[in-house]
Image (tube, rainbow, N blue to C red):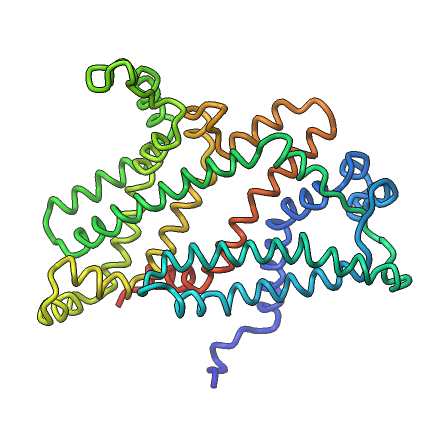
Length: 384
């Protein structure tokens, strides 16, 4: 039973909840609004009347839209899929992961779940509702205009799939290297009380505080002339580092690694050293104790740190725009180029559709890993 002395007064509850709701509305408004715009014709997308932007009457009359039945069924299925991704998917991944390899299990399970979701909304649901709507009367009449032509233009005509693939290569490489190095370094520094470990952490913090532009300006000349100073090793086949995704992985890892080490070190410090000693008594080596005992205990911390590493690489603009060529551009600088080059209203709506597209993986990651993220953040914030 809660302590009456600790209960909040009604006025404070209304004030705090109202402020929180207002903040959520302000934070969510931009993505919701450009989401509406991305599915409308330019005439509706840039209309001064917000209700015309949401309902899209010109889009509905010229292209088509969604009925009341479409909206209800679509939202219901979306709600079910979200709840399944939060509750059911993590249990199944842990249950069916091969030999306890949860990383591989998440890659397979997440890919299958995303593919199934796309099949439901792109193939199955339109086919079923296409049969039901004509016989549903008023419930089957279109009330909201909708078109996916801007997404088709971005992903198919403009080759945005290549930018998506480049982003996945960069983010996967950054997360893999950052977590591999960060877990080993964080574990070693957490279990060390030497002065050298302290100064290593201080240097890492100073390096992390440097502006990214300073680091990029240091890498850029060597990336451009890399074929010259690699020629003695590779001869005429000497590669150039400029514009290559794997070179960007090295730069982003260098920028992100101090943060990763600091964060993982804080998680390891919350794990009692007695666990290491018990594993050693049972016959494990130092690395065996780390792999078999320590890492499973602080897995939420690894996931939380990996998510932050993913966000750094996924949302980076400065490094990728300066060090990648047009062929290997990731999504964020590619969208910036779309906005800079737009000449018509249709081009601008296509750029908006591309901007909305890159938020989908972020929502999926947060929904799937929300429990681990909350657990990891709590473990990193509370000692003992």
